[in-house]
Image (cartoon, rainbow, N blue to C red):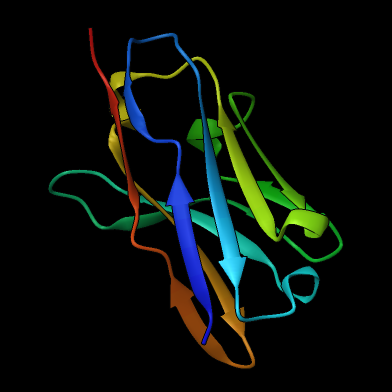
Length: 115
């Protein structure tokens, strides 16, 4: 059974940084792309960043230049480095993968950007 576990969320002041982690089990991690999504209060879940198994990355326009997605296949982990955080980045952040045609989500980690 594939499991994804996010960690690293918390409360940070505007302009601050956080690094989210997504640790996977139950799959051949290096074969799968990993996506980070977020869900802000009152809004739908949106794709923030993605990284393919070949480490090609893609970002939503509003996080380009501030967020960096990466992966460490030896640790079965993916990361989202978030810099220059803004209040509008406040959301629950989820990692997602597709393994053998089935979509898996983590439980999410809360990021709150506030002074």
